[in-house]
Image 1 (cartoon, rainbow, N blue to C red):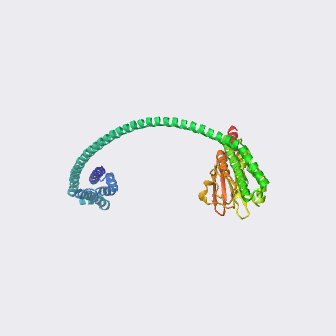
Image 2 (image 1 turned 135 degrees about the horizontal axis):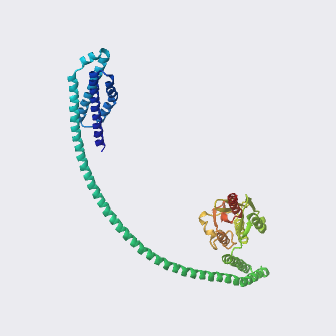
Image 3 (image 1 turned 120 degrees about the horizontal axis):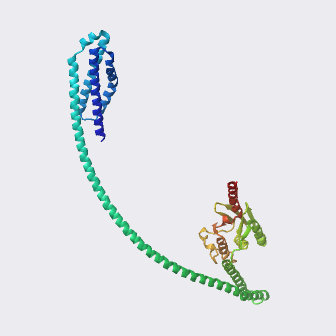
Length: 448
């Protein structure tokens, strides 16, 4: 299409040059016949616009075949020659008068040039018409081929779309079948889950009831065993021989340990059975109370508790978290090293939670046992520190999780341990008040 437009523009420019040549010829003849300077106006206009038109025409012929380029170049030369002849006659008239111009003017030469221009433009028209006809035929063949190709492509695409449509229908049918089967399976599974949940809930309630009753009922005979074994140890120490003293000591220690285990089980059962009577509690005040309760142990172990920074005030179960702090501090005292014991307590707030740290410089342990220490009845230093039930950290983690938090530990053997527990920011009343204040201000601005 671009080639066709170039040929068409070339033909238009050639016709324009032919018109200018005719204007030049007519202007020259009219001036020589009448000596009226007005007849020179077409000549002046043609002379002014001819150079640019000649350049445009020759530039447009560059992409054409060589034969056509040569014909266009010859035609342009003839037009330029005719214009130059007319300019020469006008200059002679200005210098020597009309007689000199008429004397120099050669009508046969001018007429021959114009005839050559007419013949040349006629030949160019014929050749360009042949070029356009050939291009039109080629374009027609190309269009036909393109249409056939398009029709073939459209047919293939239609066939492909039909296949895709059928495959999509089959897929949708299969999906519906699978969806119905999945719904049936989900319904069956939900029924099974509900049944299992009821069974597990009933079994859990029965187990908790059994643990509570067993622990509660075991306390009375265990107190009797403990009391009489202590009485035996006090009255007959040194009287029944060393073996008897050793055996009585085993009974006393075992009964005490059994008492501790039963108390731990009762605490765990109560933790599961009882709700959370929450209230705003200051951790700084609670920490001071914990230090008071552990004053004797802290004094005997020459330990000190350091609070780094401010501690928050959160809505929690005060009794349960007193137990958490008591467990963490008691463990630090129990598993202290030969170094003076220092327990550091701190808290920091991030976007979603308060994170508390209780760090000590005690014995520590291998980090691979970090999860084990939170299991029931799990103790790492059994031989070095025989006291303890292995339930304190498990209960502490349960307390933290019931409040929506989490608990973990990082430790290095021989260096110390750092226990972490987090609580949601939503338990911080001051945080809620800070969030409410901008809302109140916005409402006040909108109301005003």
